[in-house]
Image 1 (tube, one colour):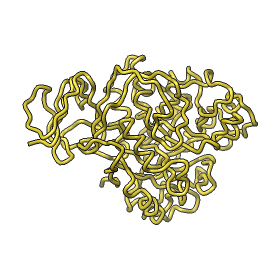
Image 2 (cartoon, rainbow, N blue to C red; image 1 turned 90 degrees about the horizontal axis):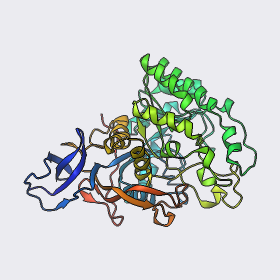
Image 3 (cartoon, one colour; image 1 turned 90 degrees about the vertical axis):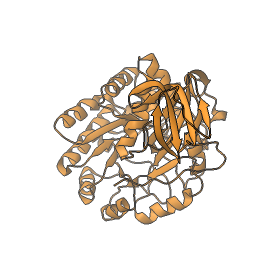
Image 4 (tube, rainbow, N blue to C red; image 1 turned 180 degrees about the vertical axis):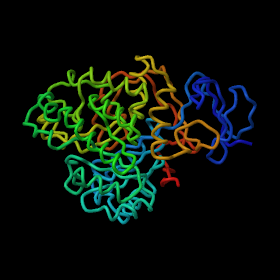
Length: 436
């Protein structure tokens, strides 16, 4: 007897999209059978032509709790994630107080998150100047790797590292390092302005190119795996391609906003579009899509980074003064599916970019796939449904979004975490640690 069977004519399995019945026992997928297979189960759902996807894995989420819980928190962020079909998040080591830069700070964060998580949650550690000696202990405590900034992070308690300090951190611990790759010497202070192009000019593509070069050099010297976060400037792609061809362990991600929003269409004063690195022109986005299609960019994650409304400076529309960050953990799936389908991509492509590959990046072999032995993290997704983005329907704490009013294709109907539906009432997420 199975606990749960879910049937769909559009199940996205490891073999691609096909009719299937997924059987679950004790929170684990125990069989992926034909759609019409006879399976005894205590509970059964037939999705018909709605798709069955594995739960998405978002490895780039800023929850901000404790310390800046008025920006976001575990209860609200994970409820938003589940509503968007995301069943696993990996929390960034900033903007919480304290930042997750040693094992004690990790325990503080885990204590704050206990009993609040609607999806499974893992944690990144942080690499900052002077904490190289703390990295092995933090790694042993189960973080999935270490985040480092090569430019100002925006918060004083998480300062950037120099290229030589990044090399020192790579030498201190055998771990995955994820890097915010902008070079401070190529950045300019943005003048007060409501014109987006003025802000864009302050963070030119050369800043990303130089920082990616520095990160690649550090990875080459240490033999370590360095992952470039939220790649925005497509001009850095040849550097990554050449390094990988030479055997350097370097990978890269991008985000929904870099793929679907365009600098030339951002209205004056629309500070909800501000993020760092910045949204660039549509021609640049075309190149990011091409790199995603050929596997040079491995995954799409949210960089969910909310703040309080006052910090977005919507009253003045001043891009220079506004906090940089876009909150989209609930919207990433329909945003990407809408654009991907228009470009000829399939649901299987989207699942690869947003579920399996992020899971593989951090070594979560039981996440991000409809396969026997995987956790029964499942999503019923209506791929042809129409969704108009209403900020009032978003679950993150401060529902400011550049997607407000957009008509998207695709809607999440139900999300299951280890075979149990996520209703937003009783949290049953678990903490994840790095697999051996």
